[in-house]
Amino acid sequence: MSTKSTSGIDESGAIDHPSRSDGFVRGLSGLIGGPLGDHAVTHDRPSGGRGRFWTAVRIVLALTCLTLTLHWVQKSPCQDGAWVDNQQYTRFCYTDVLALYYAERLNEGAVPYRDHPVEYPVLTGYFMGALGLPVHSAGEGNPDINQGQWFYNLNALVLGALALATVMVLLSLRRRRPWDAAMFALSPALLLTATVNWDFLAIGLAALGLLVWARTRDDGRGLILAALSGVLIGLGGAAKMWPLFILGPILVLAIRANRVRAAVLSIIAAAVTVVLVNLPVAIPYRENWNRFFELNTERPIDWGTIWYIGRYLDGKFGDPASIGPFQWLDANIPTLNYLSYALFGLACLAIGALALLAPRRPRLAQLAFLVVAAFLIFSKVWSQQFVLWMLPLVVLARPRWGAFLAWQIAEVGYFVAFYAELLGAATSTPVIPEGVFVLAASLRLATVVTLCVLVVREILHPEQDAVRRNYADDPDGGLLDGTPDAPWLDRLRNRQPAPTPTPVPTT
Image (cartoon, rainbow, N blue to C red; front, top):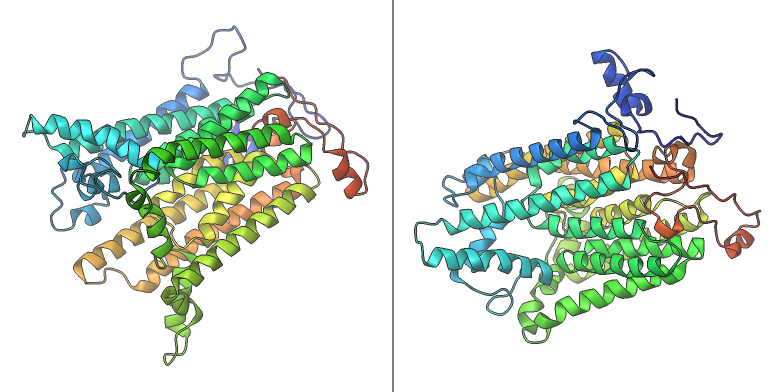
């Protein structure tokens, strides 16, 4: 029988069962007989004991493999590269991985950056070349090989392995809540977008960086792990920039806990890593290397963003004789860039203030999710696969199924509407009214904002935090876990020091 402390924390280390702890799942469980009973035989096995083969961890891993396999099947109509009659849109199987094998001239043996500018950060370019050039080399001696198909399948295999590594990180960080990772494994977003681009390269590296940070302790070995965490996050940032945003929450939480040295070391390690990864390309091939930054500076308002929604409303309800504010921004890209960055910066300042002033130090995953979500909300580009950035962070930040499924349904609706827009653009014949696409984008935006509001509410009311029912403080916090607030913060807030959380022993 599990025991609960007065704060509602399960101090026994028992496995969480969503049919008991999650209101949405508990309601659905009524269809199959109700929540798991107190005397039910489970797959949980004590240390050193024997148990059934299909444990929660193995079930989640199997579900992830199943979802990735179904994703590969869903993309299979496009694998041969012979896209006729816009089947890449009508079959919902378009992927940048296959398209860019030809667009980036990998099929000609071109080395990324040296022979051709690449629109992605350097580690993604390295990754493309590392997989693409051997395929081209093999294809030169064997003309029967469909190089594009081989390239896609090789990428799908490696990206699938990174997705599995990500779910294994989630399982490792939530040993008492393994079923949380089922949210990732069964995600429609994973099913539809896993290999649309190379995002899992950054996601896997960022997840490993979080795992290493969670293993840090306040000793010499902990500082080494903090540096290693920074290296992994820096590698993620060299693939896609967003993993670097995780360093901000680490620093703010370390300031609140008076453990700044480890956080600064992690940030320095990440910065050095990014520089070292970029230098071999930035120095000899500066113009080609700079293409990523030029493209992001020059791009106008992209589909599905808050700016796109505003531009549509300008045209729908504004004065036909004049342009509206969002239409004006679309014609003045530098101002749009500054405004987007400023809003994201203000959001980060608000999240930092929340981290310092909340009644209890927030968990790292909560702040990391808020920062990445804020970036997407105010960005002028929100590609369909960017949903994957938030997926593991949502699982760690707020493992509740109700709002999560609402968000995923909205993402599916946007996915379908987005492909309708792509088909309409390709054929110059609208497939759906523009207002339907804007509605789908608005619903996606609304569900992400709702998730942010719910996370903020749980930060302000930590007794509502599902993770803290099984963990005394922050299982992702590493050396911050169980650490009291810095004395200066107590003096600033003019209160007695908060009681130090007692970490629950890890089983």
